[in-house]
Every structure is written in C-alpha cells, then in structure tokens.
Length: 378
View 1 (cartoon, rainbow, N blue to C red):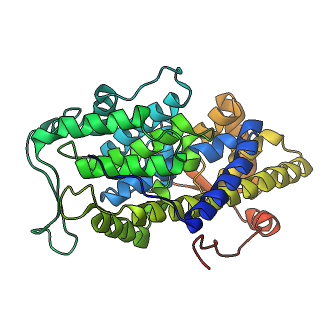
View 2 (cartoon, rainbow, N blue to C red):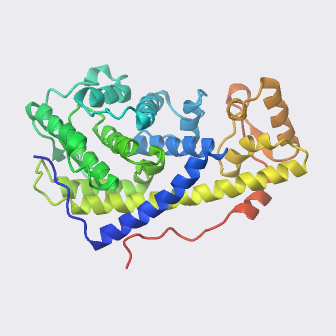
View 3 (cartoon, rainbow, N blue to C red):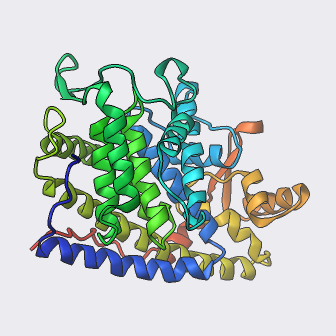
C-alpha cells in the first residue's frame, strides 16, 4: 500500500487551473523557440540543480552550475560539492532527454537505479544504483541523535518500489500531472530505497514525471529552485514530517503535501512567467541599443546574462553565438571598451559582469516589481 492521492478541494482546483493557464502561456513562448530561450532553459536547469543540492547541504552558486553545464571550471565551488553537482547534472540531462523518448517508455527498477547511480556513482561505499541492504533513518534537524523518520525495513523495499513503479506506469493516469509528480515524490522519499541520495532522487523523479506527461520542458515545471530557498526548505521538511509520519504509515492524510506542492508550482510558474517576459523585452532592447552603437545583434548573447546578473564567460558566448575564437574575443573587447561589460579575474578564472552602461538598460526594461501572488490567499 502506497500513500494515497487525496481528493482535491475547490481551492486546489482553482490553484491548479491558474498553474495550467500560466503553463499554456509559457508553452506558446517555448514552442516559438526565441533566441534567448537557450539562456533561460540553461539558467532554469542550473537553478533546479543548485536548489536540490542546497537542500542536502551542498551549496553552490547558479553561476558555477551553469559553468559546469557548459564545460567550464566553477569559480567558487569546492571539489566535494562539485562531484554532487556533476552527478545531479548527469541525471537531469538524462531526464530532459527522456521527455521525447518513445511512446513505449516504461518506468522500471533499472531506470530508477540507473538514475541513482548517475547521482551517487562517486560514493561507491553507499551502494549507488542498488536498493539498500539495511536500515536508514532521516535525522531530526533539532537533534541529529533523534530520527525524524524511520524508513521501511530493507526487506520491504523491492515490493514497495515495485508497487510505486506499477503506479507510475498505470495508476491514476487521469490525475493532473502536478498531483502525480507530487505523489511520486512523496512515496519515493518515504520508501527511502537507497542508502543515500533519496531526497534528490525523489525530486528528480518528480521532474521526470513532468518530462514524460507535460508538454512543457521539465525545467519550467521543477520546484527544486523554490524548495532550496531557506524558509521553503524548512517548510518542505515540516510537511514531509507531518504527512509521512515517524515511520511508513501510508494511511495518513496526504492533502497537506499536495497543497504545499501546488503552492510551490504556482509560485515557480509565476517566476518563470516573469523571467520569460523580462528576457523577451531585454533581448529586443539590448539588440536595438547594440545596433545603435554599430554592434552586431549577436552580442546580445553576451549582454543578456550580464543583464540579469550572471557571469559572462567568453567561451560560453562563443558557443551560444556560434563564433570563432577571434570573433568572440573581438566582441568581448568591444563590449568592455563601450562600458557594457566589466572584466573580473585573470586567465581561466576571467569572467565579465555588467558594466556601467547596463544600468540604463535595466532601468528601461525592468517591469513588474509587484510581489508574487499567494495562490491560496482568500
């Protein structure tokens, strides 16, 4: 028996309808394939990876995750954290690839264990890619000596994981994808089938459900960035403890969990909608301004990351704009000379940030500064 999907109330259905409307609007944009979409998709993926690992204590900047994604060296991340980020990136890349896998795609133990090995393969002493063979506990944040949750006996893991896999393939297929993804997350994290990495695998599974069942690219639907923010992380642990109980008790009420996840998806959708609108306007404005200075429109590939506060790497600009070494070097030098970019660091550690001329662009383009709406407010 798994933790059961609860009935949705009127507020849940209203919030779900809002999320779906925002998703439809985002889908229209992503299907159009605007040139700035490469920046947004990479940035959203990096934010999800950074958020999910931050929950587990492996803090890294979004800039460093983006650097790893593009084959660059991170500037601030320690080696221990880097190994965790690289593992999660491998799993996320595969999940994104599975979005358009064949129609005969099926969940199975091999898939879940394979994703787990991608995440944890650098910890060979923790049985990566294999069900655990002993007890496992989730420690309390208040006292590490007190278990907040005791997972089912290891002898039960294969049957419970098998039940979850069967549900993923054939159970409640007419339920909204946000609900299915949330219930997959809840059940996997409570089965806790591996020795380590269960939280990240549960969040990754939620993203995989979106990749398979939603038309939206999974990085637009992931709530990992939102969950990785301070007070949200505490709320996440609190609701998991409230719903999951101190041990495997699937008869408990799961409605608070669904409500928590729907709020997270609503807020993440608001943020994605606002970022999409902002980048669309910034691309047009920066392109027009660059043309007035006699620059080719391609330089916007370098200006856009600086506009929203990311570090600009010359090699990444070169990849994005499909330029030769010399073209990219000349463009970056000209952007520095004109005050659009400011160099920092030396040699392989060199990057570029927004220069003094970017302030005017920010003032011109920045739009809605209203707080995000509370989806469950009266």
